[in-house]
Structure formats: structure tokens, C-alpha cells
Amino acid sequence: MQQHLNATARHTALIKQQAVALGFDFCGISAAGFLDDEAPRLENWLKQERHGQMGYMANHFDKRLDPRLLVDGAKSVITVLLNYFPEAPLAEGADDLKISKYAYGEDYHFVLKDKLKSLLTFIQENVGEVGGRAFVDSAPVMDKAWAQRSGAGWMGKHTNIINRKMGSFFFIGELILDLELTPDGPIGDYCGTCTRCIDACPTGAIVEPYVVDGSRCISYFTIELKEAIPATVSGQFDNWIFGCDICQDVCPWNRFAKPHQTPAFDPHPTLRQLTKTDWQDITEDVFREVFRRSAVKRTKLEGLQRNIAFVQQTSQAANLDLD
Ligand code: SF4
Ligand code: SF4
Image (cartoon, rainbow, N blue to C red; front, side, top):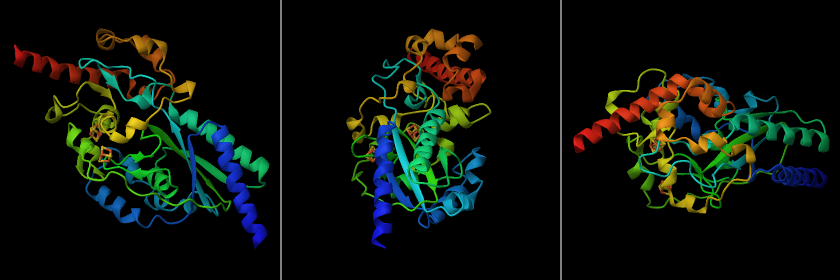
């Protein structure tokens, strides 16, 4: 028994050490099991159609709540964090068009997946026959719930995970393994009486503390929505044309955010120089070159142009009102 415990502790320490060596900013562990607290929460959220057109959120309900349905004999969920907070924001002027910081550099799915696969290979080479799968922002895994359980942070009132040392600008990835490891525990909630994110959200998407109506969020309108953006939210986007960072930017915990150390997340040089006019006149060639490896590719050029036109219309209307 003692020997077994020692092996578990040794494997846990080895994996955490290697995660840091691979550049991850945090590595925590949870025992794989049914997410009983999250089950009613997820059910409610879906019932109230908070997911809008994001149909994939409603799929794989059982798998989302139990990692043992994703990996045979799953015993542990490893959560890793990778910081993406940039050295400086791309847009600072009130009139500039803005994209979410997570989309400045290369698509995080690939960057994180590669690192997680290296971690899995390391485990298989150093521990023995271990089965497992890597997940990055994929529908069947409730990454925030696992991040909480592994002590990565708590879920803020804006529903992003906040880490006491880093704030909230990081990506989350998981390795689900059939290997027993020593679990970490959750940490407390340090939002206290603060409501800055709720007060700052321009579309009122944070409908109550810890509940975001995904179908009212600027990220949803600018990235997920396939059709025209409804006029009901006209004038509310504050120049965000891909995603939105407002609720995280105002969060006092992001005072602790430090620039990332992952060169892949640095913006394409052309992206640093785009003026408002360049954005408006963006061509297929520029779009393809600048966003070749970026998550912005998801909207396609037409989607981005739709978003730019939408925020432009509303700022022109506001200017006319002032005249
Ligand atoms: S990302 Fe923007 S729109 Fe969405 S909840 Fe946060 S502040 Fe509101
Ligand atoms: S802004 Fe305040 S309430 Fe919102 S997540 Fe940050 S600490 Fe919590």
C-alpha cells in the first residue's frame, strides 16, 4: 500500500514538473468522476437556451459530465493553464477596432494540443503504459469545472476562471488519464462584493452573478452567430469586432496578469499595424495572410466584415446624433 502511495505521489510530482518544463503556467489534478454539482446547472442553462445557436453545447450531455465516458478507465483529469496576456493591447484608442486578446497570435487549440500531447508522451515514456486523451476547448469536456476542482482558480461572476497569481487571461487544457494521481482541491471564491464585470458588460449578458447568457454576449454575436447581428444590440459593441474582453479587462484580479512567454501567441506583425481604415478595407489576401494561423479564421472574411460594418454603422449613427 505504502509503495502504491509513493508511486502515485512520485508520478504526480513528475508530471507537474514536466508541465512546467513544457511552459504551462499551472498544472493541477482532479480525480475523474461524475460532475454532480455541475449537472443541474448545465441542464438549467441549456433549458433556458442560454447557448443560442451554439448547438454543440447541448450535445454529449452525459459525456460532458463524466470523463470516464470519454476515456476507458479514466482515473485522473490533469488541468493545465497557459497564459496569453499580451505585452500590450493591440488597440488602445477609444475609436480603434478591437479583437479579443486570445486571438492575437496562433490558434491556441494547436499550441495547447501540441504541448499536451508532449506531456502525454512524456508520461507514457516515464511512467509506463498509460492511456489518455488531450482536450482543448472541446465540447465534451467541462474545462472550467475541472479547472476549479484542480485548484487552478475559482469561477468569477463573469464565469471565467480566475487564478490568484495570473488573473484570467489564460487557456485551459486537459489530459484525461487512466492513471491514478494525487488530486488537488478546489480553492475559495475571491470575488467578494465586487460587481465590476456585471456593471461593465455592455449587453447585460451577465444576467446574474455566475450566469452568462451566451446568446447575449458580444463573443457570441461576433464569432458564433451565422446570420446578421440583430439591431437590438446596435451601439453596444464598443468597437469589439471579434470577441470581447470587457468583463475581464475590468476585473481587479487581472492587475496580476503578466505578459505570456509563448512566442506563438505574439500578434502577426501586420496585425500590430492595422489602422481602422485598414480594417475596413481588409482584403481576402490580407485576411488570409494575417489570420492564417489564427482563431479569427473562424469567422471567415465575410464574418469579420459583417462585424466591422456593424460597429461602424453604430458609431456613424452616434456621430450623426452628436452633429
Ligand atoms: S465578454 Fe463582453 S459581452 Fe460577453 S459577458 Fe463579458 S463583457 Fe459581456
Ligand atoms: S470583476 Fe469582480 S465580480 Fe467580476 S469576476 Fe472579477 S472580481 Fe469577480
